[in-house]
Image (cartoon, rainbow, N blue to C red; front, side, top):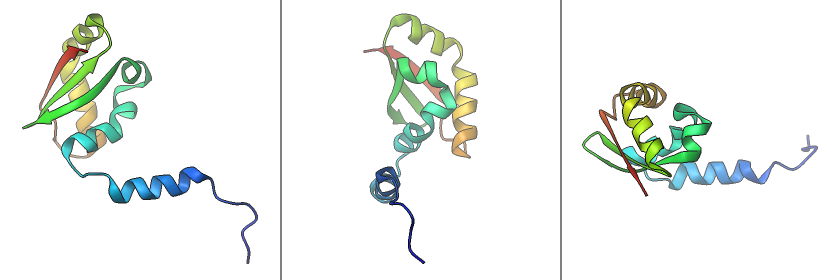
Length: 96
């Protein structure tokens, strides 16, 4: 039986990305960041480093850094739930 339409290019890219992406805690957090943090936060902040469970997030403005610091424990909980394990213990936010 032949295929009726070609597969989207994104299908191939996702498969390739899954095989070559590093399996570091930071890479895993970056994979789930948008869904765990939400669209508005993901637009304004991005995880850039992780060390011993401390996640560094660079924010587009000081207001976002302050807001994410205040909601740090909630965001850490959402990230760990999305990851399926307790990888992140603390959030550090800075502007960049």
